[in-house]
Amino acid sequence: MALTVDFTTNCYENDWRMVLGEKYLRTIVERCSYPFSNRRLIINNVKERGVVETAAKAAIDRGDIDEYLFAEDHAAAVLEFFQIDKASFGRGYLYSISELVAIYASSAAYLLYYMGDSFPKRRHHWIVPALALMESSADLVVANPCWNDRFREAKKESQGQIDDFFVGYGFSDQCFLGKMSVFRAPVYGETNQASERYPAYADEPFEKRFDAYMRNHGLKRLTHRSESYIHQNMPKAGVKRTWREIRPFVSPWL
Image (cartoon, rainbow, N blue to C red; front, side):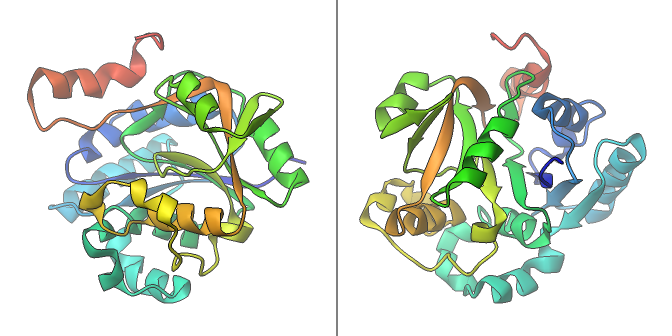
């Protein structure tokens, strides 16, 4: 029997039109090649809530997702559950609350989270072997494809390899398959000097906090040695924005 895994992604003011377009969510989910228990969208920091909600309902009607949540509706309960003071994030709050709502909302054994500006490069089958490895070892708590085809970088950062995965420290919220028995706990209050490598503009975001917890407790990440996801921010306007909107649907080698 397949392990229960939820799929979640997010959107905000600058990218909700792309994420809630007619093909985007369906394409992303299909490339993951897994029978997800729930396909969920977290909506955060949008100007016209009613307009975005109409688009989200249309995505449900198309069968692209099962439900959507507005981060603001659940933020207070999430912060209480994880025992985090909102002010402690600094500027990192807006970069963190969607992920924490996703974790809080999931009742599955694992959660696959893709940020709205990340997508699988092609159809892949890394989830099942990653789950098997994480189930077999308590210190393996998160897995992901490689980022932006930087396989040499991932290998250099790793401490070894198991099957098709590099093993080592590190965490990114761009894409992660997380073991919820670890993530759904008040583990976001620790610091580690190595975690200071995250960009200073975000102050104390979710990914920095979880990276610190992993390092402090000897917990490891699996990174696939040949499958990749693409992370690319959404430009505000112009040709670069148009290219970003269509990029998930073109040849995976571009």
